[in-house]
Length: 154
Image (tube, rainbow, N blue to C red):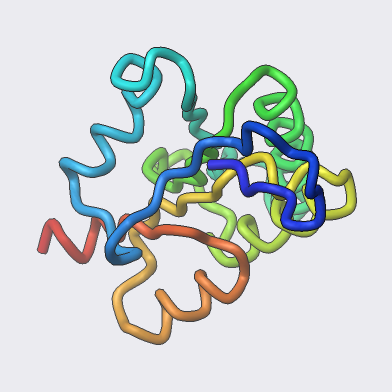
């Protein structure tokens, strides 16, 4: 969720923030995140950003998808969402995913540039994270939590 402004000494009601005891989320945690607006009466709202694009787009698809992801992230935040789930679950025979780290980095940097990064938390739902190093790098690039669904399914 959003982060409070530590330099604003006049901030009476800092934004609410969710904290997790560890950054790896299981299936139950993800289900809770997807429906968090009901449990918190709208104080937290999650939006899922699909990082897949059609195979037919070819190499140019990565750049086009990154641009649209950045725009989607800004639109979601302006629409009141404060948890963004960056997901590659849509991978199929006709849909290929932008690498999760690349998508996360692009969204994170775009939100920083737009001055919106502290207004939303970033959660990565990916099948590519399998090792401790993968989780550490995702966290270093701005993810507050990671759901490695493929590693948990196997």
